[in-house]
Length: 389
Image (cartoon, rainbow, N blue to C red):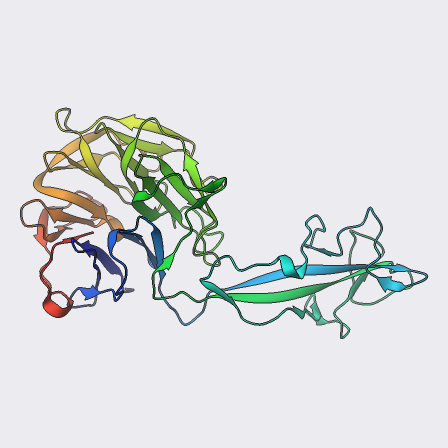
């Protein structure tokens, strides 16, 4: 069984992790940052620091995160210059993508952020279809676009060659700041809550994740473009809402629930591999009409909630076909917050002693489990402070 980590933040903003094979909470060493929230998946951990910015901690591995940039140099033959960059007005750009529709000169390629570095300079790809080309890497065709060959023929009027450059993600095992930029510029207000999941929605592209965030004004944002070759993603998209949100939870699959200021809950519907941010919200009443919900946590097939009176509730009937479920069941115990991890295992912070608890007896046939049990392990350095997942 692979090792997994439970992440937590104490009241002083220090981040800890507890390994399934470990004997104590290990403090994440960062002398500068203090955090308010963390959310983790197997390959990384996201967090909101006390400066309200979002940070990403990508775990190092034996295989670095590398991304290949490519562009194509295009030329046309003419009687005076032979092959040259003097193209016809109807031709593609001198430097373009593979389709010729986008202008891509070498100098237009920039690093996505300071968390990346170039491995080297541009070089010519001298392989075509698994076979070596002539030394300069040119492939020939009758015209744009057409079928290219590595051999020059009497009717080869155009040619192109592929240029390659690799960039590497260098900010592993450290907290890297994520730009607070939407498609129309800087985001209007900082973030207050965050939740990561969605790795079971689709296998393509590899390592794709869904990241949801809540701003101080109760708006919800979705981070687009997160996958193995782009761990930071490429921008925030605002998601329309039926009200102001205080907290959100995203499961491994297509479950996303959030808590409204008024204490009601909302469920995201229409989440698919082609549209991971979903299409609409459905409102679900609080488990207790007299005490609104303050926290919600979702997994693969479970939804748990905490109301203002610190009562814990389990939502029955949850599935991909029925993400809103069918009703609430009150559970024994009082918590200030809860979280659902792998295999729908439930974790909570007790209202009484602020200790970390997990739900015993959680199985695929009994998702609600049997009882709460405290996690009694020491902390790194044996520092006594309160933790919250």
